[in-house]
Image 1 (cartoon, rainbow, N blue to C red):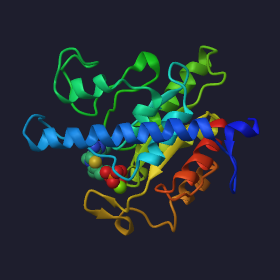
Image 2: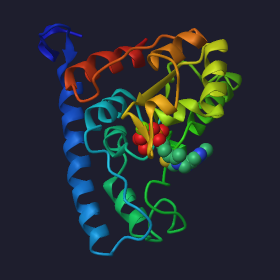
Image 3: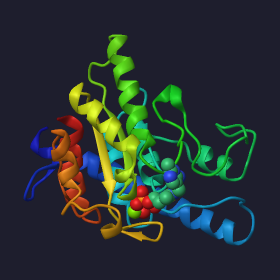
Image 4: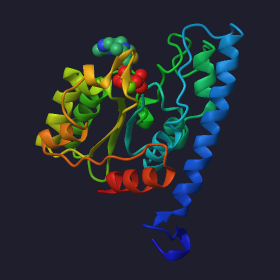
Length: 236
Ligand SMILES: Cc1ncc(C[n+]2csc(CCOP(=O)(O)OP(=O)(O)O)c2C)c(N)n1
Ligand SMILES: [Mg+2]
């Protein structure tokens, strides 16, 4: 990285990554405001899920990955990550509006959409399932001799870290030394269950330590911190 493509600060951050992430964040917020208005007007059935406040965190991850090479399993608050990964806005709007022209051909709604052939997994459930699925896909790539340079990534919530699938997937990734990045958005609640009713460890970083993998805690609303830490995790 030469100095013309970086912005000087406490640590160097790639200026191109910053620009692409900001674009993804703005695109996601603009789309979600529109989707929310359409939902309130009764034009969307099911639900609309918003990533308000998580855009820097999610968008940075999507922009650090490469569509067609890497694997990305977004969850409900990851429109910014999807935009950063290169999901077409039409894929989002067509799925929300139930169009047969969408990637799920009108058979599934809202965030249950993806382009698996491009590495964008269709969302399964809100919780830790994607950790196991992405780990398994990375093992499959390795068996086919296609793992070189590939990163698998997913986002989950604090509540998801208490599910069996999260633990099994993370353990397998650690034992097999898979190139897996898991972002945990700790918004203090899983539905109405507060942190203290979900886990007894002091910090969710302890979960990573327990499996022998690196863990970093960041303020997900701090753009610079997201850029520095997530880009390092993806390129590690
Ligand atoms: C295995 C499973 N159990 C329960 C649910 C129902 N459910 C959907 S979202 C949610 C809470 C998730 O909380 P968290 O992981 O903290 O994510 P947040 O919504 O706070 O971002 C639950 C219990 C589910 N989708 N899957
Ligand atoms: Mg939560």
